[in-house]
Length: 373
Ligand code: OSB
Ligand code: MG
Image (cartoon, rainbow, N blue to C red):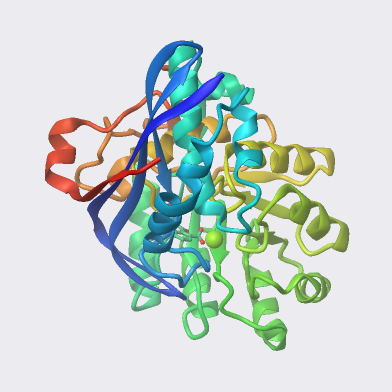
């Protein structure tokens, strides 16, 4: 039995080492909404932390940090405290009355999972059935001012050891930019992410990317456009990878059945938590769809969860699981570091295996609120 005894919301503001430009805006600050819980786990009191992946504004997804904060405070955390949970896996069902709001739910689930696993001395990797000890690191590069700037940035990241390069694209910053990268680096694993910046009417333009041997093009069209992605898949050779569209294991199943994607990016927050992420993984494995772990500029807390997830056997492509230094001068946990071979170790300690460092939190916490349960 897991009983939620206390909960607190914390916002940590971490400046990014460089601005991150995408087709949905420029981000310079990670405003991470964190959930801290104290649970009674079979008589043992344990603390747990979760991170909400939502951004500062509702431009990537309908959800955003401030909305998640209010929902966690007013609805989700009080709902989870109503009665004890029999097992960790009961957590999503205990919130199922609330429609959508998957990123907020995922943050609460992560905190409870962390607390319960800490009390039991089990790592998240072991709990999820992870197999890898180390995970390959890709990097997601924001839109640059010119093809030359992008080539320079790619060169720097390759020098650091990243094993896959993903470039954000948007109309006017696509074919010429990617042509320059491919010409300079003929053999690298290269992908692009459009964050829904195109429409099916752009199919001819997107087909020009076929010349660059991309592993995939990520989310070319809008979130809801399942049929249009399936149509686009018939017009271009580059495999389509879906990100925003995949909000559950069921939606992955539907997208695969329709031929809307050949690759899937799993983000635990986007699909509503770690349990749903592992079910989504299972669907992909069953259909032989390669998966990789997406990222949302998380702090070390969300990063730890992503690494544990990425250690599952179906995660066969390098994901956006970059080391702390790609994002922040100073992370809130002990920093995740990439080895020269371009891999990061999956945490093995109980729960997430990392926790916020009080000295750093004292500098970066912008807001804190106790939740009335
Ligand atoms: O589309 O994958 C995305 C960051 C924020 C929101 C959406 C996305 C991203 C990234 C960065 O691409 C991935 C990362 O390194 O965390
Ligand atoms: Mg994406």
